[in-house]
Length: 117
Image (cartoon, rainbow, N blue to C red):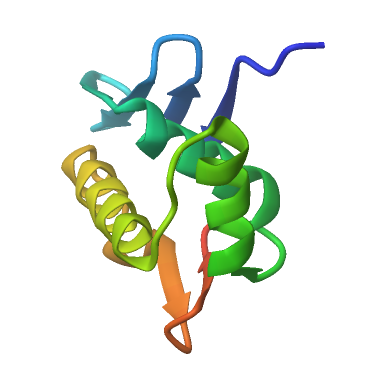
């Protein structure tokens, strides 16, 4: 079975097939809907998928991330690339209203998600 997406909290959808994050939230007793969407680059989406799959309940190491997100996709991994993509993902998540600390770095080498999916 192919995975098509995730739901983060009550209002953020991860659309894997189209590399999109979509947020639909309501205000004022459901009378006003706010909609935002953002497109992610392939590597950024692959990182998000990996984190949602593996880091929501446990800490993952940067080595695990680089192996799964870069090496297994025939891409060249490095600490610099990892932190650039983590930074880009955090920026994209904040653009649709996700908290800055949704992804946390632990001891400079491990990563964990703080919000359950």
